[in-house]
Length: 209
Length: 335
Image (cartoon, rainbow over all chains, first blue to last red; front, side):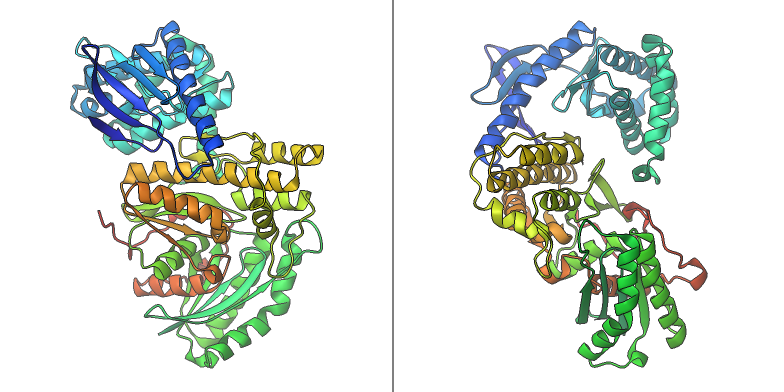
């Protein structure tokens, strides 16, 4: 069953050896020349499970990868039970909301400490499980980098996602995320925050989006 | 009513006349051609000042109008090169004062989108705007053309133009360097690996340009193959981010506009992508793709229709005016 037709991949909810799984298939894009098309699809199909694995090593919950089919550019992974943070954040009590945001911040901190840049930090890419665990998904745009710039852009994307989707809580949520983040990365959080401000000051972000 | 538009953001000086019902009565363009290198803002501005009178007279003549028939004067207020913008703004202010006509400062980027909508009949598209100075993926949401993606460094047109100059493909009257790259690309066969840099819906071309230029000078691959590879990489990146914006907004139209919209390979890629999503694809006609005043005159009409005029004291040029700063009361979301 197709659950999402994205720009880069199609997501299916399937039964696989008695398990509920997500099949992420990077389909052929006819607009690209075949050589470049397969290069991109193969690269991303290999890259995503690798980074997901490294995220686990860093202590960040991510879906279990069951299988990778390069010929079909398909990744079969665990269906994570729970709700997108996007769906629940606005309905939580103030205390719960801040607690959740601090957890998100800690997890982002763990990623960054391990040189992992998520590349698409939004509240739709974080699942809150019934046991209260936060699972990060969709590492399709992630990269390995220790550059301050990359961490700054990552954190800036998180902030922008909060501003567009959780307008009334964006400030307090981002503050709580930074708190959690600081607990993990320590003093360097200051540099990352300064970078976020610098990115905002660049011409392209003069007016808030 | 008739609006006279003046465009002078970069190397083109143009005067056009549009009517309230969207008819373009005249659109005269004079392009500054540097002897070598890129556009020198001061030299371009000098060209604009020299030809301004001629171009104005020619436009009025083409529309069979006298200056007194003009009801509104619109001009490109930004973004663009300071000296060039100021030249056009000076002509506009002088003309508006002389005619005692209302003055309308138009955002150049908004104008590129509006002329695309006018000529394709699209109502609410995802727009890919590609030119020498800009690379923007935009769509209308909550009163403005929101920027979903854009370049993090140089514009796509800039990337191709610099590559063309490095390859000795000089821009000539009626045949820009980018057009020469496209011709050669059609004969290329081998895809040379280059950096493919997409970050969310944002793009980066500077590393790709450096890599392509180095490979070009190494001389290992033919110029045809280099042009082919450059185009395939750059246009695939553009199509991918446009697709992401289309999937996100779920709009039903994809509009291609700006100077690089004339590229047939880019057009075909976007068309294939749009059709896969059940969306229509449209491209601005050639004469309105590169910088032109028709788009300024038409956008001036839209502004004026909503009482948006620019008093002289606020008609200073805005070099870094962003697309999403402009309130767009005339557009409506279809979905």
